[in-house]
Image (cartoon, rainbow, N blue to C red; front, side, top):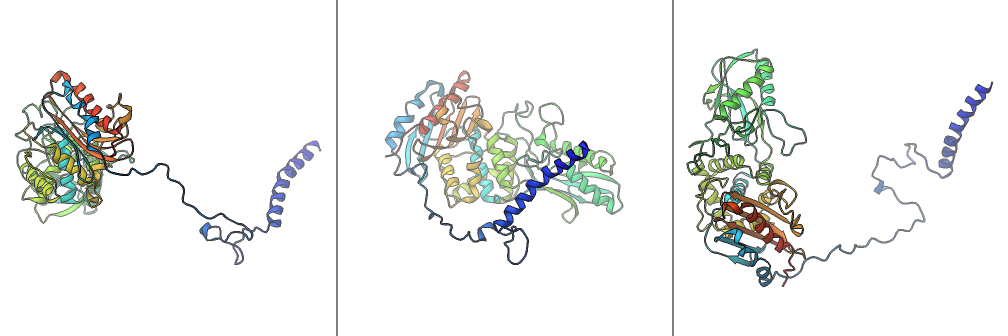
Length: 468
């Protein structure tokens, strides 16, 4: 009996509160029946009239957290902030600098002429690619059916094509040859084919794969890969470090292995084989949008991606996919945008060539154009700039310059004896500026202290009350 009484009591203890809540809800006149007289809780709550007698205060505009920056910038204050810092001996004897407002007002200038831009050149290459192709443009890697028994893997110039599927959350999320192989295998099996020979087509690009204006040591020392419209992992090997000798052949081999795992036997080794223009397409994968590729290229200063984009500019604006056509296309596109290119000499898209010459005025004008309301297609140039002290090639910089951290966004440029920094900054009162700093006669022993000196200049702009 004691057990039954205890069990009965526990049931009452459970149900009494429930019954009480139901009774209270009923007495308050609230019912959750979905009939004609009651509001449907799935509807927008804002559409339900407030209870009678409820008086709500009128909406008011909240006070701003901070007053917007007003008035122009003062060139004198800018000069006093940065001029002494540019005299740092660690920067060497040849320093060029330009600081301007977003409306083009020149705030400060030091030195004359052009200098080796190193990787700040990527700003010009990526902007030209966005303008020539559009930020939503994608690059397709395809497989086509050739002669009986043959298929051809056709390189579409996707700079980020991967050897295997990446993390779903990766940004940008690259296309990969494993996914392409699975789709190809399905198409072949649907037509009753489980055994093929494989060719690969690299005809999209022309000219030398290794730029003649690069030092001969760059490819052997794995500074950069031979440039190809077909590769995986930007020409890096499946294991270890360095670069492969033939990125297209390595990509085709990776695709063949994935095809075999998907149930289609590849007879013999893949070999170069141009695809007929009328060949039937079996499968394709497409790259992320160009805007995302540009952000990646600038954030991580990706040399291979920049060189592929240069050749894509050549195809979009000229006759072929050579680096020469790409350079011509970049300069023409910049001039169309109204960016001055006086004195510019370009030989590649990444800035690896020491023969490249650019004025800081060109870099600053490009940044102003990319930030302008009238050029939303170029916005990825600004959003792709590394943030001082936080990401990309600036993640480990500005450590001793706290006022610059988070307020400076800039593209770095580094070669032996060359240091550059070009980007955007806001002063202490929120006034935006663009700047370009180039030093191309830096002593080798001063490389890192020269970086610190450039960071100090950008930080001085961030710390300045530069309003007129």
